[in-house]
Each structure stands twice: as structure tokens, then as C-alpha cells.
Image (cartoon, rainbow, N blue to C red):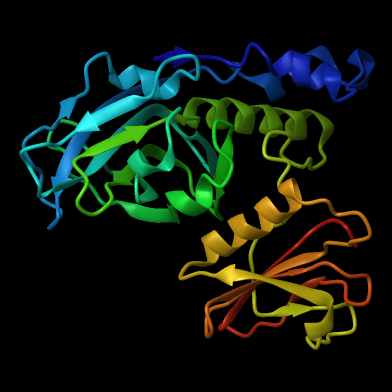
Length: 308
């Protein structure tokens, strides 16, 4: 699969970059090759112990490329007759490395009973396709129940990552006692092209821009509980408890979903906080306490918005 950023100039124009603001040579340098890249992909299956298992079968009418095409039917995997096969792994290898910080997923068209139980994103820069060997680093994990609270529309898994990788894996874990799993749309191609568009915009304008795809209001993770500008962490009356999570990325997703799906009239969302000691997630949503930084305490993680 090969793709390029033909939509870059639409984005740049819509962002208000005037032609006279940048010389032609500088513009050419900033755009480079236009984001041309190639991606190969494959589907494998693993047993409960992580070993490769004999291939499951794709349901009638399913094909692996469907998972990248939002106009195609969902990918359906059937492992009937092989109860130990519990993970379907889609490996995506790019010709050029890039730094993924999110990707989108759309649920399949049916009900949640055939959803994966869990979705993980892994990355590697030494993976060898021929021997199927390499070191994989886990970037994020999310339960499908959390991710697909809203069905049939793009939902994002967000995570902190500053490393450029050539290989990414999306791991779909089956629900217990389930031999059939349906996988909707995976937006890894869109994630690449839109990330590249933001990079070019920043190269041209020499200024940062909020990712125009996810509209994620939260900045990078900071160590500690959320401080306000006075160095105070006592904001208990100015926050809302969301849910319990085993992972900080799931907390960030809960905060993101809260901002994206809630009626925020009268609220002032300034931060998201994960307390790993009690595995609790909070969003700071009142003017009386505006989150600005992390306290440095390793028991907590804080993300702040630009809404200061």
C-alpha cells in the first residue's frame, strides 16, 4: 500500500497560510517528498502463551485490507476448533519511520458481543519480516468496552510517544469463551498522513499546532499530581472522578471522551489526572482550580490543556 499527502495543501490553505508568507524554496524544503510512504501488512494469530498458532479462518466475505477501508465491511475472524488462539495481530511495516501518538478505531457494524476484549498497540524498529523476530514496545492498551462507548464512529487511542518506529502492531484479544471476533476499521493510514500534515504545517510556520485530527485538548504527560499556578495540589473540590483504570492511557482516554462527548457549559476543563496508587482518574473542570503542571510525585500523572 502506497500513499502520499495530496491533502496537505488543502489543510495548509484552510489553516490560513498565505502564499506570500513563505518563499518557494523554503516551502519545498518544508514539504519534502510530500509524505510519500509505503506500508505492508500481515495477519497472524497467537495462543494463550504467546506462541504462534495455526491460522484461524476469515469469515466468508472478509479480507484483511477491509480493516483499513472505512467503506468496507468489518473484518471477521473465526477460530472455531482452536480454543487456544486468542489474539489476532495485524503487523504494519512502513518504509519510512514515523512517530505515532494516536490511532483511530471504528467499531464493527454489529453489537458489542463480537467486539475484541482488549486492543493493544506495539512498536518496533528492529522487526524482521522474514524471520518474524524483533523487539516490541507496548505503547498503549485499551479495553474495547471503554473505546467503543460510542459505536460506528471514530474513537481514538491516545498515548505519549516521541520515538520514530517503522513497524507497528495492533493486537486484538478475543473475549473469553469466544471463537469469533469482529474488527471494524483501523485508521493507522489516516494517523500517518494527518500526523505528517501537522509536521509540515509546523515546518512552514515555525509554530506549534494542535493536532487537527484528534482535537485532543491535553498536552504531554507530566509526572505527578496536577498543580495549579501556585504550586497547590489541593483541588479536590474542583475535579470530577471519572472511573477506575489500571493504565494511565485509559485515564487519558476517559478524559478525552469526557471532553468530546459531554455538554461542558459552565465547566472549565484544565487538566486530567491519573492516581496510580488508587487507580483513579479525574478531570479538573472548575475555574476554582486550574491545572498547570505536574507535582513530580511518581504516583501520579497529569495532562493539562491550553485552557488556562
